[in-house]
Amino acid sequence: MIPTLEWLPEGVSFLDQTKLPHEETYVLATDYIQVATVIRDMITRGAMAIGVSGAMGVALGIQNSTAATIPALDAEVETICTHLAETRPTAVNLFWGIGQIRDLYNQIKHTKSIPEIKQAVVARARQMYDEDIANCKQMGQHGASLMPQKGTVLTHCNAGALAACGYGSALGVIRAAVERGHEIDVFADETRPYLQGARLTAWELMKDNIPTTVLCDNMSAHLMKGGRIQAVIVGADRIAANGDTANKIGTYGVSILAKEHGIPFYVAAPWATIDVNTPHGDLIPIEQRNPREVTHSNGIQMTPTGVSIQNPAFDVTPARYIAAIITERGILRAPYTESIAAMSR
Ligand code: MRU
Image 1 (cartoon, protein in one colour):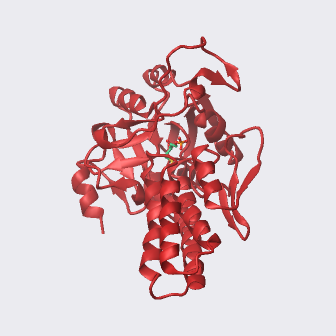
Image 2: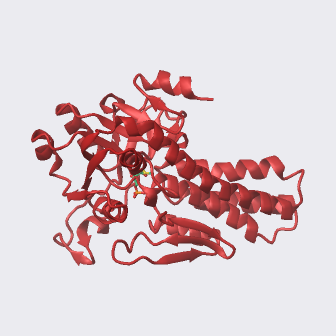
Image 3: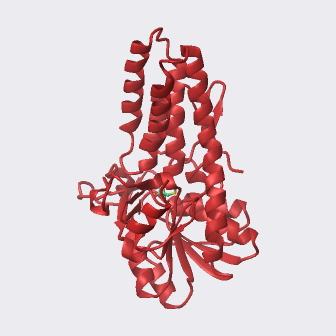
């Protein structure tokens, strides 16, 4: 199992994903401000990983608090949650993770002592880590049969163990299919500008000996036309109530190409990624990141000084391009508004 993040007695340890694939090093966050920096700077990244990191950040903040009264702790919890929530706007899992610990705190703050509250929030954050792995394995069980028995599956970005607490969503489905004996080759889009596919997906699949080929982001149309891709599977950062899905920039284009070539396009995500309070994809906030991610590669400037840059980190794939959404509860099919409501509990 790849140790993406881990609760330790002295803080939360994160595999530094900015250094992969060259260096496997860890960053220890000993307070919630450091956890927020780890999320903002993408030392850890991927919707499920930042959801659990957000929860651990709140738990760490509460654990470290020296507040002696509940009103004083209330004020601190508010500051902690706000600070962590300001790190990245698109993946709804972050707000879900923070909310899980805040809700627990509010439920128990009048019935338990402060030491008991600290113990309970830490236990819940650690439990969310275990649940994330269990959810990914469950998604794998539901989704494996959708993968070709023998063929090539394209993925975009990294929706693997590194984007979660282990196993992964889209790559978890691929792992489960391989465990069942499917003969799958993976095409990993490099995923400019941050190269999650080239650096991270390729790294973790190679560790598992799953045959992997990296493509530049502009190659899949050609390969689809030549019959070289049998399915596409990606993760999600936020799924609106109607099934519109935000994922890494470039996913939308891949979905259109898949439709044009009659290739099924699947999304795998835990239920926590479904945001029923966002009716459709146009309302999903899209993170804009530093232009330097586009202008520079490995510290070397690739573009003329002063040129204008766009760097939206995510785009939205309309529900009509999605053949199925694989969750730990089961497989959702269109019309998603109805299937999501039916599977809600
Ligand atoms: O900017 P990132 O690397 O956090 O973006 C990650 C993605 O877009 C993943 O595909 C997504 O989070 C789904 S995997 C949990």
